[in-house]
Length: 393
Image 1 (cartoon, helix red, strand yellow):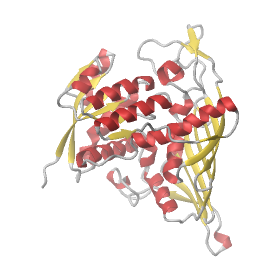
Image 2 (tube, rainbow, N blue to C red):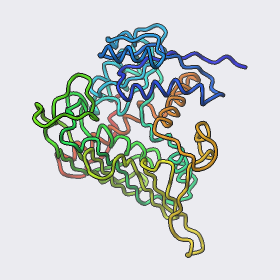
Image 3 (tube, rainbow, N blue to C red):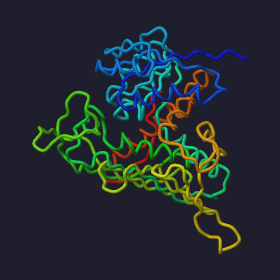
Image 4 (tube, rainbow, N blue to C red):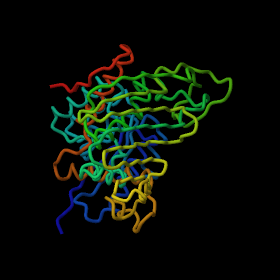
């Protein structure tokens, strides 16, 4: 048997997402026996000492450090995974690339389009492989939807509807974590969750030509957190508050380069949908829809010659779809959110091991922030704005 390539992993930011990535890397050997690499958890960087201790004691990292620079400088680290607040991404990506480390960064690589451009430039100049955390691409039924569209089973695509409705910010007593502050997150839901929705549209349908949109902040003040608080934590009535400085909601109409028409909505404090990352695609021969809340089901409508058969059919995920069988055999046996992160981690580390640029990488991040940049212009102009690539030469 060919020897597997050892890949040393460093993680910056050990909150929920950093822990999800770390668990995912650790699970890869148990789920992918034919892999060509072995991940090694080398070091975590987090400003909270207790998280560093947890990384070593409970996750199997060899070391933790409260200075993130120790991660990018560590000689045994080949890959740096950046899970810090958005506005810190660029400095960390630049430092990792300068030290010759391949970089996986949580979406959308920076809090603003300009920061994403800077991170992409640094990685390209260093010649390192990049990845970005658009993990919903890896749901087995999303991959199947991609195949159906590419094979022409839906005909010519006419309409696309993307949305990400979440209740994580619906509680007015939810803490003023970095996600609600421009200085920590950059833009709000357009950076946090619209990026996922548009990325899937890019993967499934293709590039977007023009957009027009709007924004709204519904909860304008939130309780100030103690160190280590997240957007899932809650304050109490009477706690000191601070201002929310980015948007809670965004809506956008879009035209695609292939002529399809699209609409997008995202909200972090809508009541009802709890984590409705969803899309519908309509073509001249059929339609399909997928929703994270029921991620192991897809609604599929294919025209046939018998009008009595018209209507949507529920397709259940199973081991006949990409990667599902690595987790559970058979049909309709469900997989979950972190299983998508395992697939994502496997795909990225496999790209590093084989020396092939991963998709989605920073180039796909630029594709999204080019749309975001046009949307931000539309907020000010209140008109349709063209989408042009903002990637630096």
